[in-house]
Image (cartoon, rainbow, N blue to C red; front, side, top):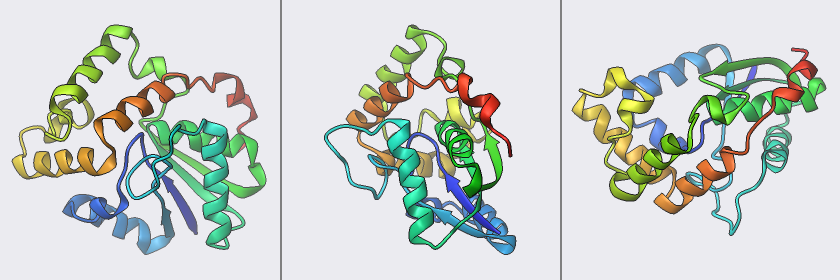
Length: 187
């Protein structure tokens, strides 16, 4: 089974392997599938452009990664913002999508940060503490008291994108509303 893994709003594929539990989880996935990961444009190891691409362009990036790996049809697995992208891909390319797996995904960004005050609070965190790992309480609260994991999470933030890139990604993500395409998903 080919499994294309689309991460959330920031990522850094090499850094994932440095966290023992995440690395173990990827090895488990790899025991029954070929896991194909990539950093989306503007994050991790991918180039930083002057403008972040819309979901349609990012969807073409998924297709390009699949083509580069010789994958005709794949399980598409998306986390968070990557789930919105995975869903759009499944609706737009049903012939290339064997199954769709979503975790912590949303059809409308407003279900993640429902108010301007919530977004401002996240932006304030990014401006003052990005890279500290303090956002762990928002993303993985059960790990918040683990100092080793918190240190890794801070590195994940720094490696995933600069503060400016993170804010731009959130601004881009705030436009996500794929509710109208949900009926087109047939996997």
